[in-house]
Image (tube, rainbow, N blue to C red; front, top):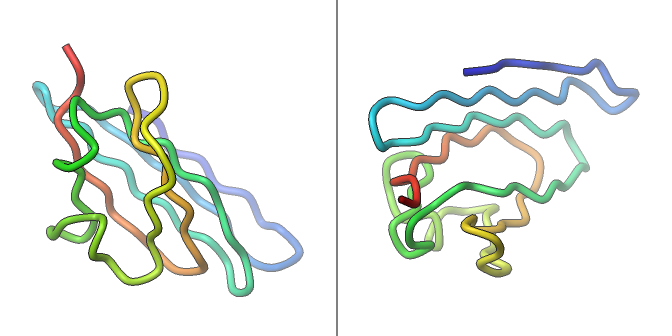
Length: 88
């Protein structure tokens, strides 16, 4: 697990992740008027969740591609909690 934050000129940017068994959990916060690329390690991009529901249907979350064992999303400002099953 790891946790970090940065006080940017636009506001706080933070990220925290942990692994429990074969599940991965990632929490990110993006300040107002910001965007970020989020890479979520995942066995299958279709199984990635955000806020308990499918990430693909989450407001402010746009699936871009699967790359190197991860699902890549673009997110706008706000706080997000992603979950996935890790690749084997």
